[in-house]
Length: 310
Image 1: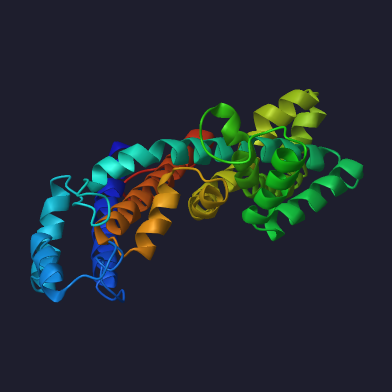
Image 2: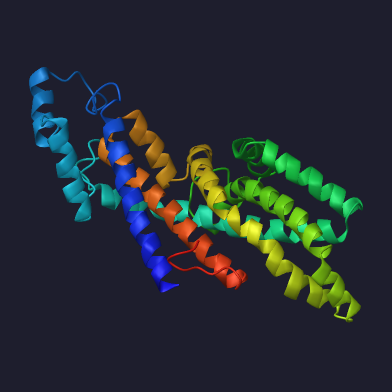
């Protein structure tokens, strides 16, 4: 296991280096200047001073090696738009709401989806199964921002049960969390139903029933563990979907998170913030993939995680 994790960590470093390189050179293709949005008409002399201040007057290869060297030391640069604030400080200030929102949506949505999928499989071809399938199709088909608008209108504006926007306490996270968790709930429900039906029809489950093993033990000790493996597999893609979905949800609910900051940095060509946020998302995604791979071995001991076999 240790050899496998070390090998994966090496792959992670290589992957992050490639992502950083691609993102850096894509930044050079963005139209306009990062100083166009500072307010007022800037003279060429003023713009040259700023370019020199931030090292943007250097050749692109020089900028690239300077940026990579600084990043290896944990320095993500200085924002062009926020009074010379360090990108690291901006990210640390904004990561809290985004992490809370994403974690709540992933955990609650996954747990409810697994439960719903189990119920659908146990009550196969009955009303619970039909309702589960309809809910899953709706959750997969309709984007999260549509749910966000509906929830915001009825529960915040019309009925005044929850606050419509901002981030000033736990109650402010309820509507955006529900908006984001519907997709993972639907995905988990669909996968769990399919896999649970397959597992419940397998030979070893029939053998357990013939031996007189209780239904509860069959479901939770034998069937659930094997049915969870495909659900664990989709955790990585679901995490990415939550990352991208958070960008829109934070805009709708005016949440001061990293997603809202990322969108704003793109509109202002704030290269260091774009690069820093992209690297943050990349690290989170790669770490999630590593955790998913390790969970395979935890859930199913037959899956050996060694350096030589994945």
